[in-house]
Image 1: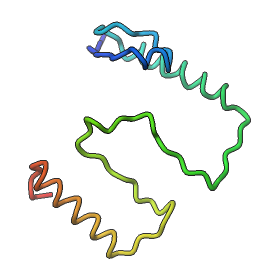
Image 2: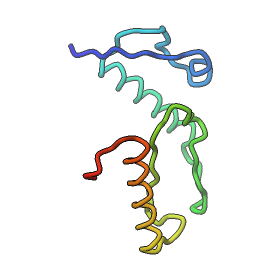
Image 3: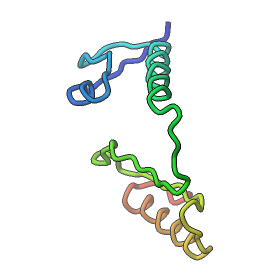
Length: 109
């Protein structure tokens, strides 16, 4: 059976999200991860069943720390604003410049 080595930082995460697996280091299987994922999804569906969401709502993820994230992107899908071709070109050019100059990505991109 295929297994993966996973390092878990527990502390507050265990208290907040109720992780079952909270050893400092352990081996878990893809099947056990999928089982736990499905349990969490089922719990969320039960918790929020029947609630309506305003179509004007904007959702954020305030649980993710970007402290150790070097690169992240945005989905420019025109949900909130309409971008002009000039702005889209600027976003692309500046992103490419930063990837090459700051992170050493090949200029062939």
